[in-house]
Image (cartoon, rainbow, N blue to C red; front, side):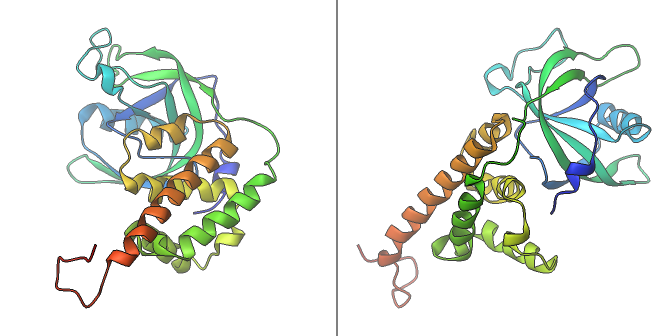
Length: 245
């Protein structure tokens, strides 16, 4: 958790290997642990470890999930998250375990299918992030976000408690985390756990940090309101499985 991604350079003049999954697993600044076992992606990993160590985490397009793109596999949604391999372990069976950190958003411009000995897809990408100085309103949004996480019913969500424990273990404070970074981390770890279909991809494809902050806050406000309405129906003295209406 932090702002180390600001120190990682991304060169958009070369193609990036594509690692597609069924859903969004990575946003900038967040960390994810992956297990690589398919031969094509083991080959991909061996290739990037000899270079930049960067992979474009892509998402399958559900609408065309059963179709084929020139025989190379299901089509992909345009937005991706470029990830940097931070740690990796090659196991005795040739599979890999690795930690990957999200670096930045990008979009697919020109995709290439497997060719010759290369078993995996790759693509030319372009930056998706809106550039410029951080919007001052993000600090106010962060303050509201911290209140929603630390106080009230949202504090009891398992994903929130896990995030708070992680922050405590790293001797960090929410106030010390840059607003853009905090919204990315909460977006993946908390909002993503709400299991709202398509929500994480909305955060991935949105290049404006202010709009992402509004989306995250909107979801947490909604959950907060639902949990507050449910509180009067909960009676700790009631028999198990019963609530008073």
